Image 1 (cartoon, rainbow, N blue to C red):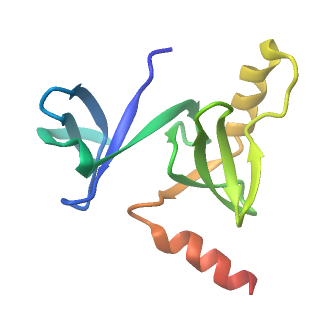
Image 2 (tube, helix red, strand yellow):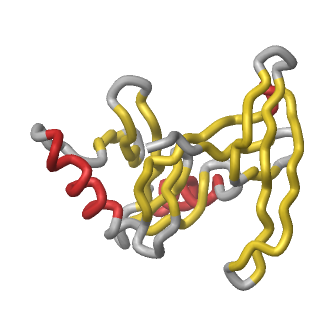
Amino acid sequence: MMPKFRAWISEADTMANDLKGIDFENETVVLRKLYYEDGFPVETEVFEVEIGNAILMQSTGLRDMNNREIFEGDIITNGKDVMCMKRHNTLGFYVEQKGKVEFIADCAILEEFEEDAKEIADSLEIIGNIYENKGILEEKDEKRK
């Protein structure tokens, strides 16, 4: 699977849906932002930003119950708990809920991992991300107190 990324552009306070390339010589990132209307792309904007102003987030390769692609930084729910999708450089993707960590599939047999992960993802729903919807995680923590 070809890695796929999106980026949070801190200086513009916006999410770019598609990483087109990285120019290491000029230290810039080329991004594309798609604008949707009624679920269909209606406009595309391609732009370049300095590497330091783009926070890259990798796709997990999984889709939620609504067939939306799950990226690191997404806030997800299983209908009961609210969690944040994160990525460990060595061990892969995991969810974190109030300091507790759980990997997507705790499976020793590699062939079964992909199937188990997809089954788990089918029960999840993306409800936001940590940059555009910070308040979701904070609200959930406040309700627990």
